[in-house]
Image 1 (spheres, helix red, strand yellow):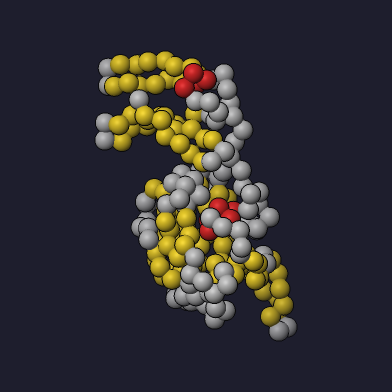
Image 2: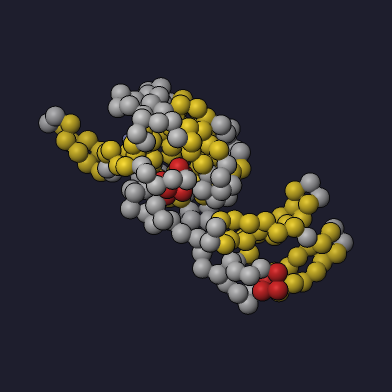
Length: 192
Ligand SMILES: [Zn+2]
């Protein structure tokens, strides 16, 4: 699946400027992302899976931007020219978390999304448009350690609890213990 379809939750976008070198007059310049048109509409942008907002704000060109790191597939994504930002730095996002909406802040080219992509631990830009986004295949027959409480440790086979998808992590939020795992429709949380 294309990353931008996941970000917009729709597929009627179109590429207005591709990734890579181009001629600007006589000068060779580099476009470090892919630009997506939205028929001049301010579509919402969403988180695509569990991740963290690295930074957001307004850059020196006046563009409102959001950087989100997605550790599972080891990429961070830059969303530029937003009209509105709905997240804050260090905020955890999930699939469907509203990040903001697209606009033309800091741009002379009308409403569009500039999407940039880098490896999580690197700062070299890659083309987000040719990246194939997918969730992991299922991993049955594994076993998870399930903590039912501070003094109780239970062991449960994943296959008896989860129909498909590997265990992503075991975690706790406000005395709520859960195991999260991947399915074809995204990250799900299973309480205990
Ligand atoms: Zn661009």
